[in-house]
Image (cartoon, rainbow, N blue to C red):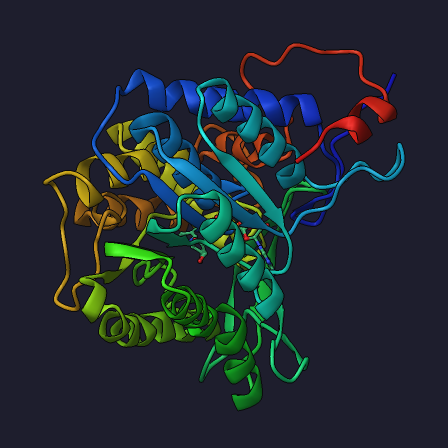
Length: 398
Ligand code: NAI
């Protein structure tokens, strides 16, 4: 019988509990079901579908609107007792099993979304087995590197400041350490490379390929999750390299809008709220912002996990009548996070946080760690231990 051990290196989770991942997916399915059904798309492609925002999108649409889904992700399966693969691998399987039980199509592509081959494979599948068209394309990819599909050149993104270095507090979960970190400034090349990896170029390439192949339904919508944050994190997010990448998505949304005009389509940037994910927990200083913000939002009853946030976005905003937009036409479900009282209280709380109290009830540290653990199948509500062997896991098909 395998023993599943949580293994955190810095703020990166290395261990996985496949049974816990399955339970976490089922918890999210139940959350969506408890909110009832809504009218929405029926044929959906999600790029970056195996965790956090992308997975939540897939679950909300499958179990909220009865959508058939194609999910693209880059995950690893089990190799040995010491190398059991990545949580997203098991999330893909748990999602497919749950969706198929309801008679829904749930096709997983585990492949590099940046490559031309993956795009072509997905297009062939849409044409031959998925009814020929998709009515929603969700781009929810987060990656630290990208190989250019034409030149093969590898680009690596950097999370760095622009202009001035940033000095501030950060938390390391592995050692429960609160420490001062300096974030250096990026070079022009590092900024450009971050835009190349996390900007909108690949989103545009996907939409061009899908349009060219005539697999976009009339009125197709494509969405991209962005983050703007507030003055509390602007020096290292909005004003840093990641902010440049997100700004590039705004520019590419315009280009995609033009591209989709003749199929009456639309590209929509959705500025989402701060949540605990594999990607966000390695952003310097961000965990400190989160443990302050979550504490305030919990007290106000506005704290959301990815499934709560995304289900609200899709149900109430994208396919409902409660959408809020900014002057650039971006959808703004992050208004709860940016609420002025929430931000003022978060600022005041963050100023009180120090090495002695960061992991006490003063903050939402415990909640942050629980949400982080849940991502790898640990500390999951409703979890029941099961006897599982490596062979059992290897036999699971995505
Ligand atoms: P995540 O790390 O949980 O998920 C990323 C997904 O991308 C996974 O499904 C992964 O398998 C997939 N992926 C990565 N590289 C790939 C590749 N080469 N080929 C195919 N799939 C690949 O990330 P998270 O946090 O859910 O982020 C998704 C989007 O949401 C990002 O654009 C992020 O900036 C945005 N966002 C995140 C916020 C946060 O607080 N976490 C807040 C607002 C927006």
